[in-house]
Image (cartoon, rainbow, N blue to C red; front, side):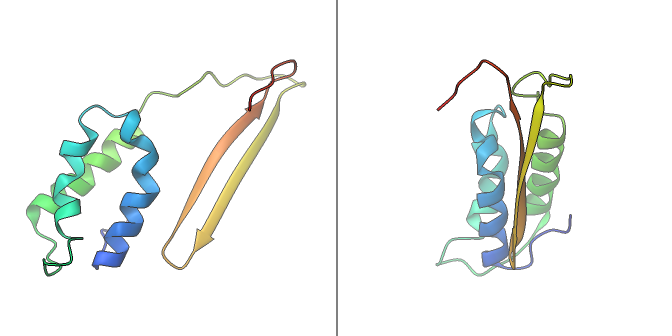
Length: 103
């Protein structure tokens, strides 16, 4: 994944990874240099701090702990949701567990 090249791309990236804020320790500290380039009063400048934050948060996401066990078997149903647009893409994998109801 290439680094963002504009404020809008940076905002889209931060929006796409926002889910992880509750699952990665010190998430806010890691991505704070990325938020700096999105402020209206600041010109967009991708410097070493932003590059380091971008690389680190990607690494943290890649090594994040699974939020639940992946269950296997003929009765298990996997559902993959995906979305794509001009500014990015997202996906999530869900499992339907027989006998469990979740809102």
